[in-house]
Image 1 (cartoon, rainbow, N blue to C red):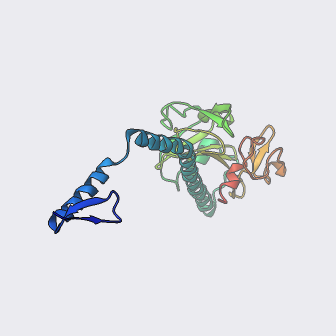
Image 2: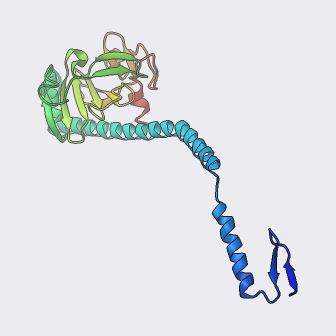
Image 3: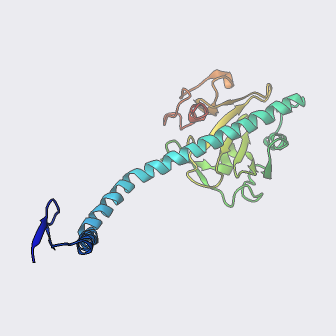
Length: 246
């Protein structure tokens, strides 16, 4: 029986004369065997190891970026709610001048959907949070006072979205995700200044010694530290202005 060599195949096949069907079957069997070889266990483990390293490097950054965008969006929404409520109260001829913190939060609550209102020192007992929790100064290394004790005890509301809004004098403190972490000024806690006479609302741009957050206009326009950007030197108050512009 004569044999013919089919060239340009790897490996070379020797097929009988008049191969026809037998030729096609031989080629198919070879292809199946080649595919069946696949990857070795070592190659699979190395690939998985590389994927794991890349994921370990990139995932935390990706998660933080997504979380930051969520916090910024929530802060913008809360700031808009507070500004709108203040404007509507002004149109109602209501001024916060001389009002207690509780009266101010009750008035704001007329135009902000909420589930709880908590007077000073009743942050937990009135249901604004399951328990008191520490807040942190930017970037999160120094423990500040508990949320319910800001300013010596602020009146607060818990909104339908789970945001906590507190009033301490002309400071309006917003924890955009409530009890959940990181509970850090400039990350998920932001400050606005509500002028009790004009009812105008402005974001904090920095810190004034012995007062706290300031917008650079109220309290004589004095800013001890800060310029409307996120800085450790002003404990993160300036993030409130910076992140409204993002």
